[in-house]
Image 1 (cartoon, rainbow over the protein chains, first blue to last red):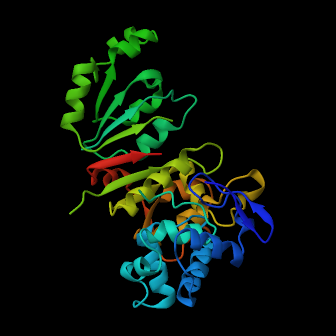
Image 2 (cartoon, helix red, strand yellow):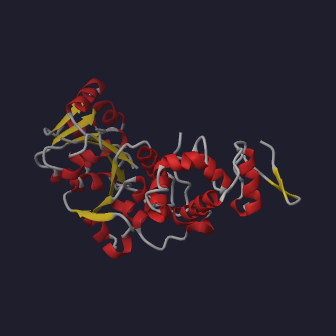
Length: 111
Length: 97
Length: 120
């Protein structure tokens, strides 16, 4: 995967398209990462992205599906804390796709 | 009943000490590799009623075979018997460091 | 019903990779819905100690990873009472939000109650 150019600056990606440096993340970076996944970011997406980044700050790891669902249910309620909801926002593999757009490493406990 | 396998010397590692701390009655102890030096260690006395096994080839390699021969309560075993012990015990806990 | 395993956590967090590998294995199993219980024993109790700040030695906080375990459905930790006492660690220093810390006197019986035990 080639690197991203965001606002004239080159941002290195790993071979699967995840940011190499978390510090390179910005909202503009996220927009580009999302468009590479054919996802147009809405407020619902941003809400999940921010929570995911909160998860990473708290636990220093990118969550697999199950812990992500649980964490979102705790913060946003049972309506959004469901895999089907995340699947609609970040198809086809919400934990991986959302982590990528949020600038986090690939979840290590995901097959 | 648990089969505890100790593979480190009691003089450099906490393996034996921690194993004995987690020993339930009815459990068995198997000494392999540098764990065969446990044969000369006084802590073995604390296991009065437990079954104790020792891999003969590993003990012999380290010059522990004569000492082992004087210890009635230690059964010297080969690899086939080791496999058999593994089928007879559950769980098996490896104290490898 | 899945078979429940016990992970024995015996090593201090940063001196070698074992503690890290142990929690990685537990997290991977939990993500696959395989239930694992943890027993912290010997120097392994240091993994739970609060205020770990390993950034300057280039490592991630193992304690923070342990704090994620409730999110993975692991809501209790067993801790060897004697190992805590030997190291003068109090229960307050090893609390993890969302998980119950259970001190164990008879670690032998606890171990014997599992069909499979992994050691780290």
